[in-house]
Image 1: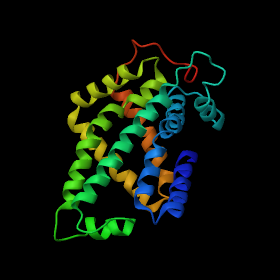
Image 2: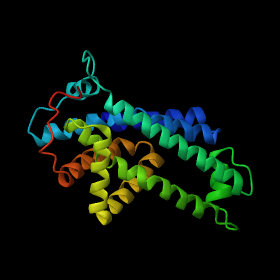
Image 3: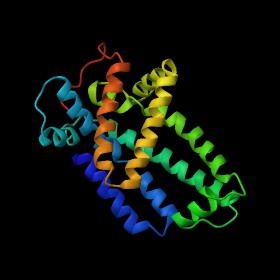
Image 4: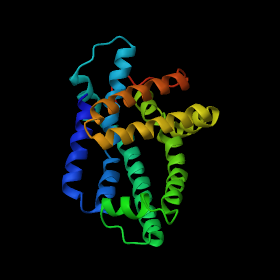
Length: 230
């Protein structure tokens, strides 16, 4: 629950600080993507320990987060992958801002403006097209990440190879992966709308993501990463 509590507190602080600045709010959420992968691996480490009937503690989570310390050959895989996610998120914010600026009948400067002039507008289809644009851009990101993070934690594998494995899983299981993406999206929205809901949603999604990886990837041929993320 610590992971979910952290996300809830982050969301609350973000709303307090940037509520009147819509694009600042969106950009801050994008920046969170840079550290989210490093945070998420704590949940995967807990799930792996439970699966192997090993003891679980807060120390396990922190050791996983900081396992690179004192390791000269650590290549920062998850941090670098987080930066890639940050770049993709920044691209979405810029694309979304350009689309809304061009096609919204009124300027959108605050979250309520977006709700009033885009989401609830009945005289145009800006929201529908904006939604389709988001789906088109999010689909390849989802395909590139759905099992990549737990795979990077569990096995010694380069980032590109892990991403290709993730794409292979999606291509071989299109319908289950589409349903999984929809479930993640709506669960995340419910968690963000309630803020406190993230306390439950985040750990549930984290553990479910680990089991999705274990059920869909046969990684026995790859060397096991037994000591965190060296």
